[in-house]
Image (cartoon, rainbow over all chains, first blue to last red):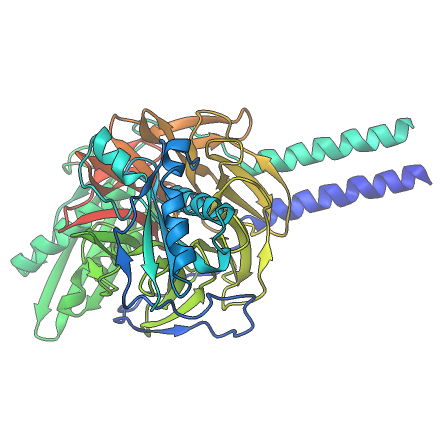
Length: 176
Length: 406
């Protein structure tokens, strides 16, 4: 009985292995390529039952940049040093005093590092900054994060000083 | 007791056999047995003949299979004629194998004058197919990110760098394009709406759809080999994690649950597993996970920074195994092939410039990648077998994040 079960197990594993090897070659034939159309419009995805989508459009009409100094980061890191964390109470105070405002935290990286990983790293930096502000009493629902990866440098230079400026989270105040 | 241990060992052995199948070793074949090919040119309309000859020679050179040579000593010789009038061009081409004096190709091609390059690319692929029995790349396209004055737009070009067409005109940031398997769509990350969203665009109708616009980051979308599913990065539930969803929206499944940031998914050709990047252990490394989630397997161990994985999709009927290419940081960025057996990485582009973001051609032999010199990124092709790098023609602006179409 055990021997039968054992043989069946081996057979299943071998059959799966064979199927994997055979299926590696299967791909749909590519369509012949015609002229590329020009692009217009931007309709939302067809499935309205998406799990959750961005809550409404932020009121960016009166968005203000540069009210608060950006939080800076060490190379390859999303950790907020105590020196940088000292910039945050001013932001928290403002947010608590201005209930109609929302905060957008933009996470960025310097130009070294690969593009897509930097989008995730920039997002981690923005989220880390948000976490600190939540600890300081700002409601998380009032804070949105946007990562630009390395695509929006503050300083177009190519040295340590420029890179240090670019590894940053910027604060944008939105709302009426 | 002994029987269950035997079963365990048998299962391990079979699992190891399956895993070894998935990762190919990379052998460099310098010179790679290139076959001497003489292009004699085309009689008829001299101006057209010059154009046709130029495109043909470039295609044969880029294929990696041929060494252009004078007729003396050539293994294959091409001859032909080209005619043009108001309605179009007609190209007649004969390729003869010298040793047997047999024609391996005798064909006439017709098209409009505007389509000249496309017609010659078809001829080139036919020559490659007839002589090598391999699928050529001359008719393929490369999508990429075009940067000018801080604005990033999507563009597409022929594989040889010609016919660059800007696709988006949003004056925004559009990045990280990837192709659908049928070549009909691109999916990419768009900031047009003020936030990073995953957007797809039908290249024939021009229609765009916002496919993922959750709070936080939506990026890195990659089509499964059957075109039905997307793998992508979302940060809506915490730090950036890996998800799958239906390519038309909905049916969202979360695959990873880590304290680190995931990104950059790429599908194995069998559609069952996904390689991706995670910095959960401190610095980014490449992992493998089943399409339904579960326990991930770490692939890369060193150096300390490995990103931008891309699985090759060998052509149907080919004996090639899928190869995983990655971008590693060793001082500068370099491109290498991952070896599953000992988890090492064989460098294929490591020359002191920053070389990153490789994307496989559908022949499983060529790559397109971004080389940055003096902080200016531009696109290069690589023949992985010979390690030859081919610089693509300069364009106005910077080019990066290329994706080679099917």
